[in-house]
Amino acid sequence: MSASPTSDYPVQPVPFTAVRITGGFWQKRQETNRAVTTPFALKQCEDTNRMKNFDLAAETLRRRAAGEKTFQNKPATLYPFDDSDVFKVIEGASYVLSMRPDPALDQALDGWIARIAAAQEPDGYIYTFRTMHPDTPAHEWIDPQRWLKDPDLSHELYNLGHMYEAGVAHYLATGKRTLLDVCLKSAELVWHDFGDRKLRIAPGHQVIEIGLAKLYHVTGDKRWLELAQIFIEARGPGGKVYSQQHKLAVDQDEAVGHAVRANYMYAGMADIAALTGDARYVSAIKKIWESAAERKMYLTGGVGALQHGEAYGADYELPQDGYNETCAAIAFMMWNHRMFLLTGEARYMDVFERVCFNGFISGVSLSGDRFLYPNPLICDGVKKFNHGFEGRAPWFGCACCPPNVMRTLAAITGYFYAVRGDALHVNFYAQSEGEASVAGTKVKLAQTTDYPWSGQVKLTVTPEKAATFTLKLRIPGWAQGRPVASGLYGYDDATPTAWTVRVNGAAVPAQADGGYVSLARAWQAGDTVELDLPMPVRAVHGDTRIAAEEGRVAFERGPVVYCVEDPEKQTVPADLVVKAGAKVEAKAAPDLFEGVTILTIENGAGAATKTITEIPYYTWANRGPSAMAVWLKRG
Ligand code: FUB
Ligand code: ZN
Image (cartoon, rainbow, N blue to C red; front, side, top):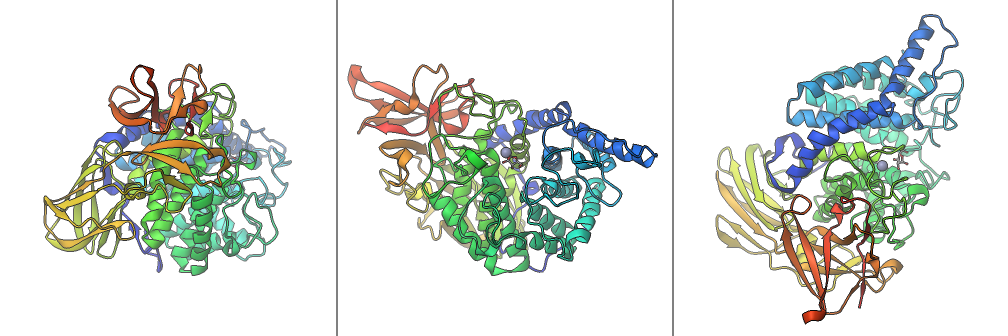
């Protein structure tokens, strides 16, 4: 079962299953994700009763069917959206399975899926909090009638979105239809209830649009695409800004409200634009992206500055203790990647990379079993900023972030390459081996690199037979002297680096057009491309309209943003002063945090020298709760 939509993204990603990480930065992160985070998340869903909710719902169905007309169970967890954590874990575990057989994991998923299927009502409805407790709402967010409080907080459609993503992932990984059939039965009900447009519900938490687009992709059934459109078109005018219900989706032009909801919606709009060819969505999300990436994004790529409402703030409202939910970073990556797939423009992958190496990967500890929900740029190590924890936490009452990191890391290779016609985009540099199909020719791609600690990348290109196509290498904005395309952040010294490209040892003109160097040639097996992106340490300033960054400096090297951390909490890193002319150097620290590059900032000279050490932002809080700051004072 598969379908080729009549319209689709003009740029097609090379699937994550076609690319394998063979070493370096992402191997450590992905292997920890597979070996630690995945079993840990499965266990947490059991231990915290998220799976039990499905059993309780199934029990109610069973006993009522057997004649116990008043039997009902109370939910075993706090939130009606807890079902979604289970679905995200299944999605992530399915990606893990796609890359490597694991009979025990496969069997564990079969067991879970059987329990989920048992909790589905005969007409396809699935939502444990209602099914287990059908006579009266088990939670204040739930209306006595299905769906009616979804525009507020019931999360009925949100849960389904994550289930659809999981069902598709599981089907593609295993060929089994077990969860997919649960999804399709559910989608039939959603079609029955919403397909005639009589019930106009703007989902209170978006993501079903993305799930439906995936269902459409895998089945070819146009109803699922139509439903995605119906849900997007049901928004506005006149509803809540919090859930982006204030205007018609096509009339929205600013990133506002709850950041996870927002970014999932913008990603869903990109899907609809691609799958229907409706250009109104493209024009809306381009404007919204400019507001998010050019006026509301942290240096770490984090978005959603405000704790109140977990929301986007006003333009340039970027307090250092910004909220920056890990899920918002992930949804921002998803959205940026889709913007790239719509346009082929490198600036979206530049932002993707910034989020990925900083405000996303900070969300999980190096050990793989401790998490950050907010990702602020400052911390005193005392305040319980992390949903009740002053450091990283093993799980959360509202546990959306950990399984979201897990599913993203498991499929990270899907962001490396993309193809449009006879052009192969190389977007992401990582030690890996992969295969793409370009203009009908299969091409093997092998990258050797220590990125992001080094900007040297050797790419070996092996087409199955000699073939003419264009290899497009992304030259990141940071290598061209600008951290972001707008003036939101700038380098004190904005001199572009002297990056070079060599093909089979011969230099080619270093010219990036739209962020890519295009190498059009007849490629032969074993051709090599060497990219050298020098990585000077860059002092960064913020736009003068960012009050929190006034008189401050931050440092980055390549795509990695740095911070000062004091695990002893004896100092206030944000009070540290970097004097004008301070010597800043990068040093390899192979024994620290599984091998990173640190920065040393030398203030003064001789015996009076005071050295400040910086670590990559994503590694902070791995030594227990700590004081931390990204932005230091300028002296
Ligand atoms: O509402 C479900 C999830 O809980 C959201 O995506 C997170 O931001 C948290 O509020
Ligand atoms: Zn989250």
